[in-house]
Image (cartoon, rainbow, N blue to C red):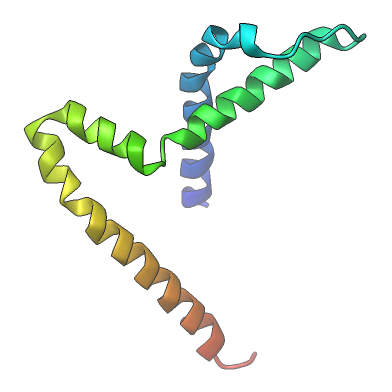
Length: 104
């Protein structure tokens, strides 16, 4: 339950932090002329904020963030390949644990 609460909180915080960026790109959104114009524009902005939130996990964004940290970023950057391998290994272990468990 704690993990779910942390994930929901982190996702919500990501959306809130990305929301101001959507105003800078508002003019690039397709103009709406139908009855639900204001809600449609709001949903367009929400989808754009979700895209910005998802960008934080890409390799290039992580590299830029590490570069901004300077020497501390270089130290943290050394952990990146270790975290990638650990993530894959834990997925394999989880799948094996599910497959090997005795039937109930």
